[in-house]
Structure formats: structure tokens, C-alpha cells
Image (cartoon, rainbow, N blue to C red; front, side):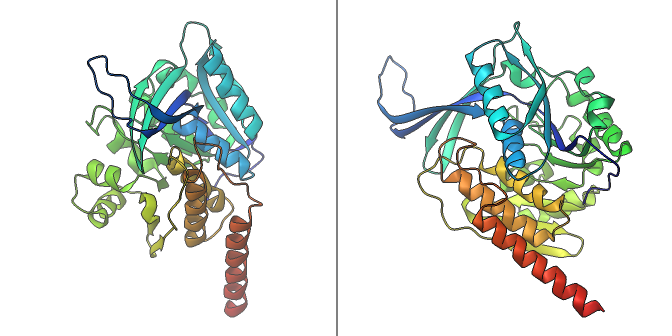
Length: 330
């Protein structure tokens, strides 16, 4: 749990990879050149961006969330700000930059898999001077997402995390995929500064260059990361820590596109962790959020709130277990 003390404006802050998702589903969504016209079943235009989706889910789970970023002076930028405002995210530090076009991701969804075409635009518009001491000192926790897409911040990530920790923040990291598939940059220097690392299975094995999740987690923890939460898609998730490991399975989600499910998992896990809940309960909340989002179209439509029946039951079980443990120790 975060060790930050004193009054802070936010529970969680993040750096925005601000973009819109155009989600294509149904029919033959594999493009064919040669001026071939294909019909698809449906489409949706939604706010995208890993950190934006994370921020919305964290706010819906009762956390005070701040985000810094840039959008273009266009319809997509207005959609992003409106969506985050409606979810309860503080967007006062999102700058409208008329020199930018807002980022766009085109997701071609087929079953539980998807291909994504990305126009960067505002996604990587942040620069080192955007990670100010004032912003860092305003929160209890920093969630760093889309590590490899924040190309303007990459050189200073370790320094940013060191400054955050000096201000008393705890830190979580979700790298997401590296489009260039180099998997290097400043990541090795950043990992020892992370409290909770949150990759999916493929990312964990690729980053560590290990052949199994178990070996990958051992490698990550050897870098000094105390908690590793690994997302396994439809198979749920696992969390590894010094005291052992926990696993959470999920029932298959139907009717959605899985966009943003991992980002909402991150927010759910941290919403429990920042409340001091046991790691197995944090894992369950993360899985519940991820599955809820995977059952809907887009990254925010299916996001649950803290009062959701499923989350309430998980929290009640955790409280009862804590009470029984406290009673037994007397």
C-alpha cells in the first residue's frame, strides 16, 4: 500500500496517452488491397488510450484521479475530455493544443483478438517538463502506462519515478506492447523503482526473454519489483509477491471487444491495493473490472463502480477475513 502521507489532491495520477478508438467488429475485418470493398458488422467511436481508460475506471471506483496530457483542437479531443469529465477524472491539466491532431487507433476486432493501426498525434505529445514536481507531489500514487508509446518521456522515466518516490508516492507500471518490439529503452533502470508491475503474459515473457510466465516473474522480481500482477486474458490473472502467489479465473465474457480490459484490471487492482486490501482481493477486483469491460464495446462502457454488487461482495469477504485474522491474533 502507498506510503504517502499528508493531504494530497489525488489518490492516483497518470500521464495521458490521449487518443480515440475506431473499433470495427463483425464480418470480414481483414483488409484486402486492390480496391476491394468489404462489409463489416458494426463500428464504434470511443475514447481510447490505455492511461485514459485506466483513469476513468479508477475514478469510477472512488479514487481521486488526475491526468496530464494534450489533445488536438478537434472533435476527437473534445470527445476525450468530455468522456473523462463524465467519469469523474480531473482534466484541468489536459491542454488543448491547436498544433496537434488527436491520436487515433483503428481496432480490427475478431473474436478475442484484434489488430490495431495507430496514428500517434497527441498520444506521445508529452515532454519531460510536463512531469512537474507540483503534479507528482499532488498524489499518493503514480500509475505509468503505455511506457513505449510515451516516446517524449522515455529518456526521463527513471528520473520521474525517483522524484515520485521522493515525494512519497507508490508506483505501478503497465508497459503495454512495444510497437518497435525492441523492449529496452529505460525499462531496466525503471523497474527497480516500481512497486506493482502489471504486464500481460506475452509482455512479461517478451520483456524478460523467458519461456514461461513463472520464469518471467522470477526475472522481474529479481529486478527489485515486489508485486507482479500478470494478466491472462480470458484465463484471468495471477499476482506474485514475496509471500507466494494467487490466481483468479473468470467466466468467458460475451458481446464485447476486450478493448481496455487490461487497463480496467489495473485500476481495479490498485483501487483495492490503495485501500489496503489483501492481494488476493485486489486480484479479484481487477479481474471483475477487466471482465466487465470485455463484455461491452469500447474501453469505458462496461466499467463498474465501487458499489457494484460483485466488487461489494469481494470487499465484504476481504473485510471478514481481516476481522477473523485480527480476532485470532488476540
